[in-house]
Length: 272
Image (cartoon, rainbow, N blue to C red; front, side, top):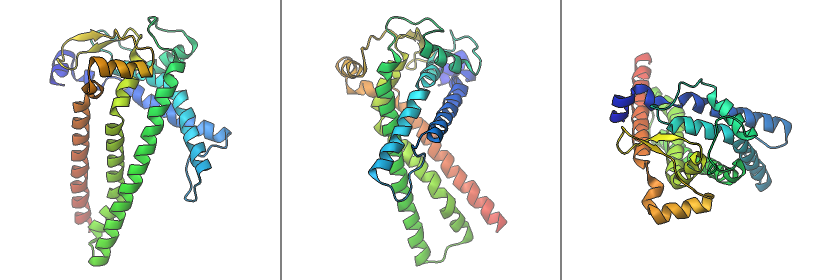
């Protein structure tokens, strides 16, 4: 990170942020439109049944498929080296995503995988991430609320603690859900990213050194071939390249949560 900041400037660490928000917007919009014109539910009711869960996951799958071309374009914009990247507009990923669907836009190599080959790994990763994060979130939230309830019964709590117990468990549950799903699915995400980037003529930064660029010369034929190739040529640790960045990310996330709790407690105490 220091080397990137020194050679390319602070902007290099934030590249692709705009396109990431656009992908989130496309995902939310696609989910809303699909659920509006189909009987597929956006939310699962308390009286759920296997059919309702299946329809809900089908909605999520269709949403990931619609957003996939834009996710691919955003990923390329995020990892492409700032040294050779031109100043593209914020809607460039929309243009590239549409171009990827209709077969136009920036010329790609013959190693580029067709979108149909990317559907299964993209949907698999998205659905598994959603399932794992939802389960972890509900478990953590249940444990924290039960713990807060027991403490209320044991002794009287201050208004400050009551306010924290009302809102902070949601933040902790979301943090734990995101952390667990990202860690568990990191190997699959590594495979997914390599498949999306292959054949796009992308030049990426050498994140081991911070001051060189590397071409993408992989020749994976699909998800299974990518997994086998990584395991044979790089070993199991090959699936966890870049994992240190995730550790730093969630360490900072935890620090922000703790600082937020301290500030919130201080403000509440001053207002009581």
